[in-house]
Amino acid sequence: FYDESVLEPLKISATWASLLKQKRRQQLRAISNSDHVTYQGLLNNLFQSELMSGLWNYGSRVDRGLAPDFIRELTTLRVETGLSLEDLCFGEPYPSAWGLPVEGRTPHIISHVAPSHARQASHIVRALRSDLILSGSARPSVVDLGSGFGGMAHYLMNMTPVPSDIILLDIPLNLTTAYAYLRVTNPRSSIVLVKTREQLEQFSSQRENIEENQVILVPSILAADVARLFPPTVLHNAQSLSEMSLATIRFYLELLVIPATKVVIESNVSDAFATVNSGHIEVGSGEISRILTERGMSLLSRSIRDSAARYVVSTHIRL
Image (cartoon, rainbow, N blue to C red; front, top):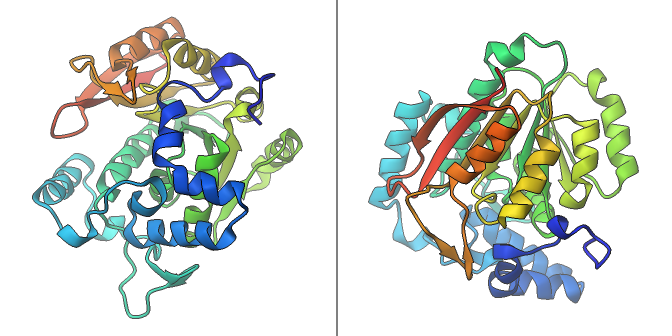
């Protein structure tokens, strides 16, 4: 997928070049050794905690209980989105073994990281409810540049006001994790992992006949095909643009922000912070906004995303 023949912006570089080697060692080793048992164990650790502790070598917060900052997150989430606790309870994300829910445990999705994912999804939901999109006749396409482990997509597919195509665009290493997570938490939904351009073309030809949400996970090397086959009505990014080089950011935005794009929502590092991530100085949200302005988008709103004011959420629309 990512050999020497690939276009430079599509290669794994900047923050991710070092992150993969530093924090994904176990996952990479399991893949290279075709060690299904170890990989399954890593995924189980991820599912059980809803954190990236086992899979991505981050420290788990499970033993600390609900920290004060998490309680603050929940309170802020309810104020900002109007969502109640019940609104956030979808699926059974705590399997006792591969794909099996914990017996006797009430189905819920709330965890230490879930509020931020629900908040990101709520921004997209508001966009899908706007006249900008509802006035159009075509089925909306929501392209998320960066899948994470699928937390935000999980909320989104359970919250969208109109049937939509939710496209997760990322490197295969992340997509396999997101695919597994979404399949476990949404076993009855349409979730597909694309491996070839032909598969993507097939799903595109069938999209108008589908009356429900579908999630399509696409390797970033097929980004140009996503722009062609699933023109983004809404483009979303949570932090990963900041982690790219400026040239790569420009490449993706020039590729994916097209005349059909009505809304761009990006949550990235504030210009007030000069953040070094794995040796890479992250690009500020203001620089991203300037590129979007060149693409015909107008800044509608900008708000602080987290209590430390490190990240901001910016919404751009096509007037």
